[in-house]
Length: 247
Image (cartoon, rainbow, N blue to C red; front, side, top):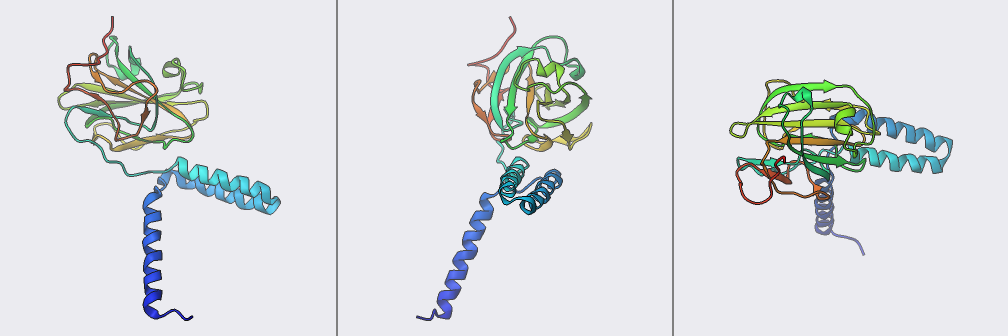
């Protein structure tokens, strides 16, 4: 039975609507990831030419690479005093720790919240607070497992110090991991950033440390999953409940 014009238009409209819905669910790739995704895709074509089973493995790796460099939109809470997660991943440690010397934040312990990013997490990093970037300090180092506590001191890292309008200085440290070999930063000294604004990424598995003033109200727990730009880590304006102070 022939299909009339109205039915064809209805089918086409449904297909376009479905395509828009699918695109809305797929995060765009960050431009820094294009060379890597393209390289994986080219390698996949060569592998298919050599032996098709290898090509299918290459296809899976290309999809993984595209997911690694995904750059999703996030909705960040905007109330003054909130500290949001700078990275997707698992909160691996919360403890009072003396910040790295290059941050120049003093020799007294601050609240350190560490977020470990596996190779399956989105690796675009976001500012935990709104403020002005006072300094950015890169330090070369080792590439041991980023989940280990000593990675904060031994591994290659890039540190930012952000001056907030009413809550003092906050430190953010990008730490390379066992697989990570490249830390990328999009911002510069003196730049003003908003909470949740993208400031960098780390390629292939790593960790971020956030250093907050001692006594800060922490709203998350170790083992919890964080979403960059959305999960609230702490609140400067709350004074009751769970805080961290050095003994």
